[in-house]
Length: 384
Ligand SMILES: Cc1cc2nc3c(=O)[nH]c(=O)nc-3n(C[C@H](O)[C@H](O)[C@H](O)COP(=O)(O)OP(=O)(O)OC[C@H]3O[C@@H](n4cnc5c(N)ncnc54)[C@H](O)[C@@H]3O)c2cc1C
Image 1 (cartoon, rainbow, N blue to C red):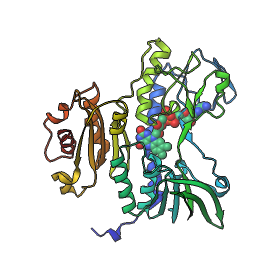
Image 2: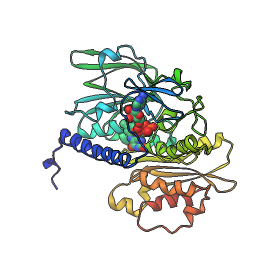
Image 3: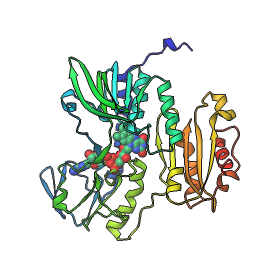
Image 4: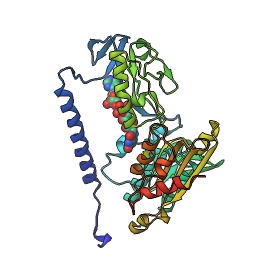
């Protein structure tokens, strides 16, 4: 195959993405319409009291409400940023031309995924992260490893960076930042803001509803009930695990508690998470440090993809697996995978952890050879 003969058209990719999304949305709408018990009303909802709402001016009453309002980006108070102009993840998924250069502020999930996407499209990407490494809440060996891989493929990565100001000169945008205490200036065509998210509460009338916030997110208890006794809340709006599968998990719990008063509680001990970089970074449970901080004596198992036949055969040898285990009883506390198909492999660990499973779930189960899943088993066997 001649790679020079290949070409890439961003507008075709965006059209394909739109078609996929619209197919998914229509499927969901069909499911709603099939259900006679649902009146589907669209519009901006706003509380006028704990039991009264207006939807685009239309008055509604609800004894009980479940909020599934999601999250929106945080715009940090960076002087000059508004004047300079920036895009968010929404616009980044809908650009019609590939920018020559892009500064991305924020090096967590959203920032690193777009950094790699646009870098591979040919954009000169500068990725600015406040923490000492990308994906700062993940297992440090893996996030450092991923940072190195991103830098190796041409992304200009600056960690420990505090953006201080932004501006625009002619068609160029710029930001000034303290990088490890030294002031630096970066220029680009586009600034992409990916500096964190908060519950989407604008114009919702939370005060009228009696729903309080806990920092940037709604305050809710483990039954997903907010500070208003007749209002429940799920998904991103509650913070912590901003993933679709968490919102899907929350849904029935909020519904059963709101409608049937079952008092069900959420358990987020096993929420797998994944960044869809290449290689992907996926994890579940807690890191080694979190386990030690929580008072566990831990065993650690580490294995590298490069040592396994399947990874060598397909030429995807970057990455590693780290398993964190309670030394006292062999319970698996966490799994951390950077590597090919980490987003799939992580389910081996998640399923093993579901009911407080022990290490032998992974070490004694026969795994198909040659597969990437053997790396996970290998890390479990290496735990000591
Ligand atoms: C760039 C990006 C990539 C992501 N990739 C992944 C991924 O790969 N995997 C993953 O699991 N998660 C991913 N996520 C996170 C995922 O999108 C969210 O966790 C998920 O959508 C949360 O679901 P939710 O139901 O809580 O909120 P949402 O899906 O945000 O839905 C909230 C809905 O409520 C509506 N709404 C809000 N306020 C009102 C109001 N007052 N009146 C009426 N309607 C209102 C909103 O318009 C929206 O339609 C990604 C997020 C971003 C930003």
